[in-house]
Length: 220
Image 1 (spheres, rainbow, N blue to C red):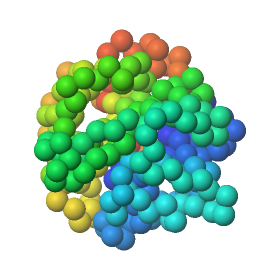
Image 2 (image 1 turned 135 degrees about the horizontal axis):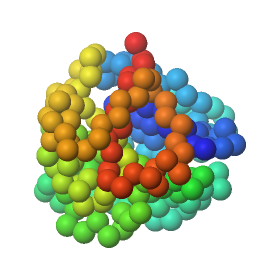
Image 3 (image 1 turned 45 degrees about the vertical axis):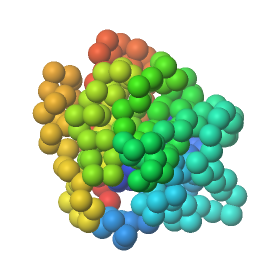
Image 4 (image 1 turned 60 degrees about the vertical axis):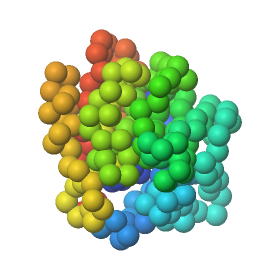
C-alpha cells in the first residue's frame, strides 16, 4: 500500500510498495521558516520553479531523477504520471505564470497534487476518479479556502488534503487552516496523529463523500 508523508508546506512524499520515493515540491526549510524535508527521493516532481517548491537538492541523491513542470503523460518508477497546466493566478498567468498539477497512478491509488494553483478551472474533466487530492488553501499566492472548497466539490476526491497554509514557524503571509475547516464542517474531518498516512484503497472505496485528512507537521 502507498504511504503519503507531509513534510510541511506543499511538500509531500509518496512511497510505493517497493519502498521507492516520489517527492513533490520540496522546500529547503529555512527559507520559509521550517526544517528541511527528511527524505531521500528516487524521483522529484516540481510543479513550478518558485523557491519554496523547487529545492530538489535537499532530497536528492546521485541517482535521483528530477522532473520540473513536465506536462503530458510519462512514467516514473513504473507508475503513470500526467502533468496538467494551470495558472498560478487569476490573470491567466500574467502575474505569476503557470503551474503543473500532477496526477499520479500508484499502487491502485490516484493522487492529485495541485501545486500553487491560483484559480478554479472552468473545466475539471481531466481530473477524474481522484482518490487523494492535495490542494492549497492558504490564499495570497494560491486559491484560498473558499475556492479550495469549490474545487473539492467539483473534483470530488475521496480524500481532500489541505496544504500551503500557515503553521507555526512559517514566515509567508498565508492564512491558517481554520477557515477551510469551518467551510468543510459538513464533511468528516480526519486528524492524523503524525505526518504519515498508510493508504488502503479498500478503505477509500468505502467513503461515499469526500473526507478531509489533516496531517500533523513533525518538522520541529
